[in-house]
Image 1: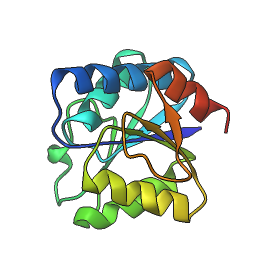
Image 2: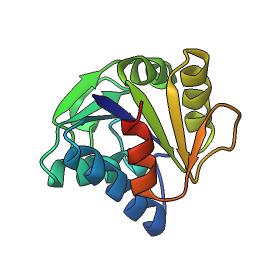
Image 3: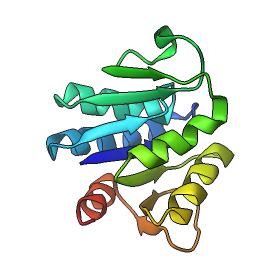
Image 4: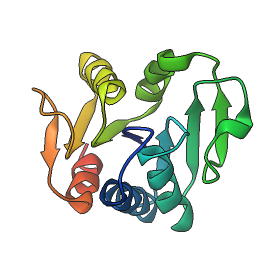
Length: 145
């Protein structure tokens, strides 16, 4: 299974730690992780997955593979800016939103429109998204897809 983690490119330490745990738990469950490949929540989840032996995919908005955070195994360059959100959503089997801003909200909306399962961990409270209160609960809910 490919599990997408979506969230902001900048985050505080608590958000980083939680995203790291989500990524770690995804890898420990034997799943691949896909993110937007940059910093913040994306980096934290990628780091957690990578340090747990998982495979990480980064869908990058720009023109260079080198823009990926250091925990991305497979950088995919799109030159598509925010339109890459559609690629992330379409490539993931299920998505976990970890905190996040308007970019995360756009990914949530696209995922729900495409009838993908979305778990919101301390993220947007919107109809159709399943709420999770802990990283473990978020990943468990994703696995029950």
